[in-house]
Length: 201
Image (cartoon, rainbow, N blue to C red):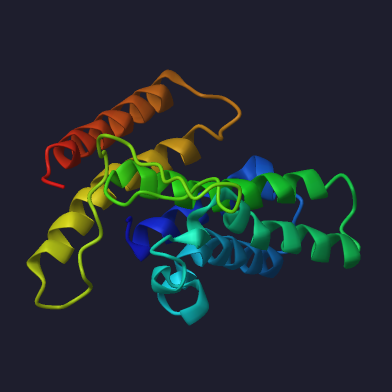
C-alpha cells in the first residue's frame, strides 16, 4: 500500500488544479475543500482504525478498497453539496475532483503491486493485483525503521515530480521552457518508478 503522505499528496494535487477548483469563491473555501479532498483520498485506509471495516472482520478482504466503498464518501459529499445549494454549474467540477481523489487512492495502491484488492466487492469477492509494482510499499512508520524512510523517499521521488508536472500543465500557455520542465519532471518520476520496480515484493 502507498503511504499516508503519498495519498495526501495526491489529494492536494487534485485540489489545487486551477481548472477544477475555480468554482470556490474564497481562499478559506478552497483550503477547506482541499482538506476535504485529502480526507476523501485517504478514506479507504480507515479500515485500519474502524474495527468492522478491518480485513479481519471481512474474510481478509479490504472492502474499503472496492470501487463501491471508495465512491461512497464522494457520493455523500455531492448529495450534501446539492442540499446546501451548490449550483448545477459547479457540481460537475466538484464531482470530478471528488471522483479523482477517491479513485487515485485505489490507483496508487494497485501500483504498489503487493496487496490484492476486491475492486468489485460486493458483486464479487475476487481480488485484483498488478503483476508488477511502480511504487514502493509503505514501510511501518517508526523513527528507527530505515525502510520507512527508504521507501518513502522513493515514493516521493516518483509522485512529487508527477504532481509538479500536472500543476505546470495547468497554465493556459505552455512555453517551450515549461514543456521542457514537464519532460524533465516526468523523467525523474520514471527513474524512481523504475527503481521501485526493482524492489523485492
